[in-house]
Structure formats: structure tokens, C-alpha cells
Length: 304
Image (cartoon, rainbow, N blue to C red; front, side, top):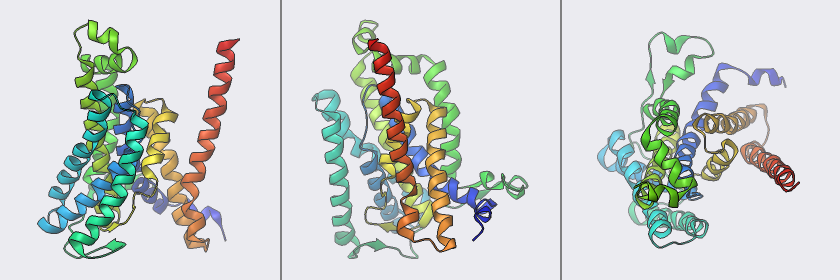
């Protein structure tokens, strides 16, 4: 078994497929975090987006409708967190955990109620998201897969510089960061913290819904019960690791995407799927341990 065979052009494609859903969800979580709301409901929002995207694509035979429905569904589902946290002053952690549990149960129930199947729904009538190849660029060795992505893949990568500009170079971004850091001070400047927080949570849900659409319609063209499989939690860790910075979120999501892509490729070497599937979560645990130690040292230094 030659592990050097892992590092091929196919690995880059696998990493990108694993990266895009996590990146979209993590960028959404970043916006909510910048507004002062720590969103750990990304897992449920991804799952809702995946289910509604597949259902809409199946009934309309149009992938674009499926993507739009997934985005809207994620945004609507996020209103539970937004309204409960912003206007009812509920605990965002408790609300988000409840949303994750609700999403698992609701999608499993609707899978049986609508399609009369359990576990997996796949049908030729589901219109998957196409791959848009950029001529000539897609044929360049090694970097070619970067130019052979789905529309959501290109969108996710473009959102990184766009959100960086919005957050750090526009008045809207300044107000959003101000609301997250000093809501009372922002209010004295005429900014409505509740409106910005609710808008950030809705945007978070919409992006997570797009991540679910990419996962279900772009990667596999089917829906499987609990198919988010922890990717939402990985997106949460990516936000924490990057300290809610767009470029850092991309780097963190790329790390987890690489672990997922390498794990998938290792299956061709005869390693058990259960072992290779654990790769991204092992990386997540290592990152959390590293972060906890770093925060502990920073706290000790501050006290000293």
C-alpha cells in the first residue's frame, strides 16, 4: 500500500466536495457570531436544507428551485433561534440544541410521510446541481478541480472575499461587529441591535440551507436520514478556530475538508469505512483540545 498514491488530482476534487457544505454553513455561523449570537444550530439547518432541497428538486425537476427552497427553508428554520434569542431573550445554546433534535426528527418523519421510504430517498426524478467547468482552466493539472465546481461551490469561495469586504470595509459590517461586541454602545449611535442580530441569524440559516443543498443535490443527489452527519458541528468548530474571520473560516473548513477527503480516499486502500469516516471528527477533537489549552494559557497570562 503506497500512501503517496493518495495525493492525486482526485484527492483535490474530494476535498472540494467535502469543503463546500462546511464552508457555507461556517460562513453563516460566522455572521451570527459577529452579531453576538453563537449559532450551534448549523447542524439542523444543514439537514433541513438538504431535505427541502431534494424534495423541491424532485417535485419540480429543477435543481435551481431545489436550491432556492433549501435556502429559504434554512432561513425560516433559523427564525426559531432568531426570534427566541433576540426578542424572547432565550438561551441560544438551548434553543439551537432543540433545533438540531427537531430537524432530525422532522426530516425522518417527513421522509416517510411524503415519500413513504425510510433511511434513503433517491430517485431519477431528482435533478442534481450541475458542475460548471470553465474551459481550459478546468484542464490544468492539479488546480483544474477548482474550476470544475457546482454553482454553489463557486459561490462559497467567492463569499469569502465578499464577506471580508462587507465586514471590515463597509458601514454595515462595522455596525454588525459593533452590535456583536458592544450592543448598548451601538444602540446609542442609532443602530438597532435586534434588527442586525435577527438579520445575521437569518443569513446564517440561509447559508446553512445552501450548504445542505450542496450536500444533498451537489455531492450525492439523494437524501439520507441525518445525512449532515456532524458537518454542522464541524462548521461551528471552524468558526471558533477562525475567531469568526472569513479567511480563517476558509482555512479551518479546508482543514476539515482535507481530513474528510483523505478519509474517503483511504477506503480504496482497504481501510474500514467506519475508521475513515471518523477522520474529520478526530481532527475536530484535536483542534478543540488545542484551543482549550491556548485559551487556558491566555487566561492565566491575563490573570498574572
